[in-house]
Length: 77
Image (cartoon, rainbow, N blue to C red; front, top):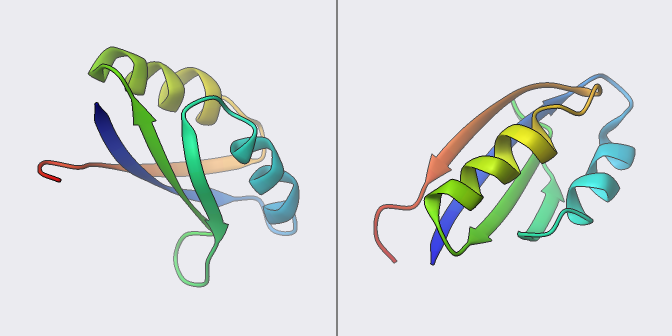
């Protein structure tokens, strides 16, 4: 099982809407609005690195209200 945390920046004012959409993505275990440089932190789990990549690239990064992401892949649990 692969785990990653994705730090997400959104357009101003779209945090709540993006949070709802991110939480609905299969593979997202948890997601929260946070204060700081990033607006949302999401915890992802997938069976393979390929599935994890698909979630980040196709399901998260392609959303129009998301301006940038930073993916942190867990090295050891």
